[in-house]
Image (cartoon, rainbow, N blue to C red; front, side):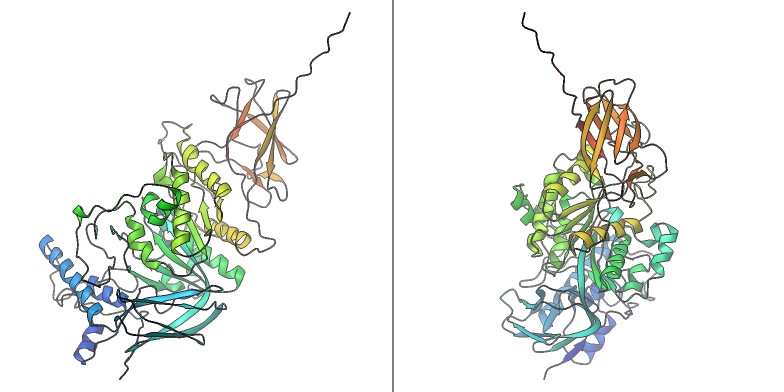
Length: 575
């Protein structure tokens, strides 16, 4: 007889007995005591095993446990017991669902949408959604996958059934646009850390039915790609609830995109503060751009081994699972999400790579690798230009290491990698003594504008910034021209254009005076009568005031050669 299991992760589970019942949740207890072998969702397994609530926080301690912290040996024992609890249902259960295949998910419209999970080998699985019926047979690794035909966008919650020997019903599924939101702390920052007015605005949107997020729990490591990860789908109210809310930049991006498109928008929230780009890279990306890929060091393996044919699932442990690898974030937090159908990625990372001469190469690897694993040709990768910051703490105000390595790589990536774009944010009330700008709403909205123009081809969207085009010397002055101007140039403070510099040799630059003339800037410096090079804002703390009248700031630019006037030669008279 086929059993039907309703998976409802929107309800809070009672974990008061977690510590004294060796990781068995009340939901599992009830089903087991009733004599059933439930078709468990892997997120429920992880909640039971590791005390992770559906909201992403830690489970409260059992009343029967002491109020003191468990000692180290007990923690190790609980980790081992938790791992065993994780593996047992996979053996007993008919179907184990991937964390991302769950209630409240948003499916990408307009493309084939993969749906996958695990079942007993040889057990045919049927997926029904939106009038479609798809069947699959698990392989020896127990994994099965179907692809739904392209779907129309829909904000009407619908049900999906997944059946084998048993039947699972997933509720509240929408169809719209799905984007990955990834990066380090500035993408990771949530609402309790941002500008109070922006936080208040976000909280006013908690009833918005069009925005959702799959929130991957933070700080998950693995030495090899995992089958599944620890995460949960959240609606708008859960997205803004603290302390375990989602990326503020990602939220504002989704909100603005949903408003403009009139359809549901979701983000896959994958962030880790203080991390370099390397932990996010897929092995496929290394290979695509010719970077050497170091195999994981299994000699440092810590944590539980997966049982034969068991699922390798990422979860919080003190040290690495399945060895140590440079791309541990990809293995634990990104690989388990693929090949979920997505439109693209918004990326806010680079502070930790300041000084990396190969950052462009790593951006190429990120784009190539994620494009491959998520099956999106030339995946849109919309980057945030890293904000100005005084890394020297006042000791070297002319330092340009961030500009020379990260900004330069971001600009070049936008020019050379298909699907890649960069948005400037130095005009968003930046404090150069705070590496975490508090104004996240304009960042998310600027990324949304780039997506609307580049991916959705919306007309009338301002989604570009003027860029340096040419520099020509006229006497002792340099005339600087720009491309990408929409409605003329101005300055944000009504003053003369700032942060222009001139040089006679391209090495030593001096501050210069600048004035607007139509859509050009005239630049001069008394100490440089014959300028040969010009630059603007190419300094880690620079916040230039030059902008388009439509409110996007002009991109800073490094040293550029100045076209010199043609020297006229007098003809020699013949006697």
